[in-house]
Length: 350
Image 1 (spheres, one colour):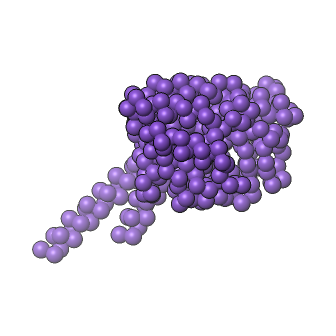
Image 2 (cartoon, rainbow, N blue to C red; image 1 turned 120 degrees about the vertical axis):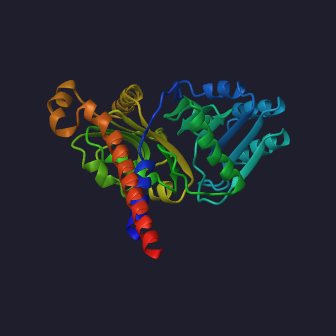
C-alpha cells in the first residue's frame, strides 16, 4: 500500500511540472511598451485580481480605482515586507485605492510576496517580472506575457484570492510554478533539458542549487543583474527579467534562481511549450546579452554542435508529452492493481 501511495505521489509531481501548451497574445517588454497593462485593466468589466511586490506607479493605481468606480471587483495583494522597507509612496497609493473601492491586502505571511500578476475577468492573464513602479515601467528590462485563457485565468485568480484571504493550499496546476510549492521541481525540469540554454535572470545565487544545472550545458548565454556564482555571464544592472529558454520551452515568471525566491517567498511563474514564444524570447535574451558585452553565438557554431548538444525539435516536442503519457500509464496500472488486490482481499474475507 505504501508503494502504491508513493508511486501515485511521484506521478502527480511529474504531471505538476509538465509545461502547458499556450498561445501568448502579446509580449510586453519593459521599457518599451509595458504601459499597455493599463489598457487591459481599463477593459475590465467584472473583476481584476492583482498580486505584486512594490506598487508605486500612480497611473496603474488610477486605472484600478477607475475600474472599482465603474463596478468592477478589484482585489490587490501587496507585500507587507519589502527589501529596504515598504516605500512611503506605496503606502499612500494603497490608501488611495482603498478609499476608492479597491480591496487591498498587505500580506506578511511570506518573507516577500514577489509575484507580478494581473487577472482580468477570469479571461486574461498578464504575468511576468516587471514591478508596477516608475523604474519598472521606464527603465528596467523584463517582460510581461498577455494570455487569453479562461482555465489558466481562473487558476491564477484562485491563487491571488487565497493569498488575499490568507489560505495556502498546495497547488498542482500543470505548468504553473508557485513558490514555495513546486518552483524547484519546475525550474529543475527546464534546466535539465538538453540543448543551448538562454537565461535572463535578475539573480542567480549558489543557494538555489541550480548553478550545477546551468553548467551542465555545453553552451549557455546568461545576462544577469546579480550573481555570486562562478559562471560566465554578462551583467546588466537593469535586468529584472526571470526568463529561461531551452529549445521550444520557456519559463517566465517572478521566480529568481535563489533560495528565498524558490523556497520561501510567494512567487508565480509559468512553464510554457510554444516554439514562437521561445524564438522571440531567445532573441530578446541575446539582444540584452550582447548589449551587456556578451558574445552572441554564430550560426556556424550552433549548427556544428547541434547533434551532440540538443535533441531535434521533434524530439524536444515529444519528450514532455511522453513523460506525461508514461506518468498516466503508471497511475492507471497502479490503480488497476489496487482494485484487483482489493477484490481479492474482499473475497478472502468472505
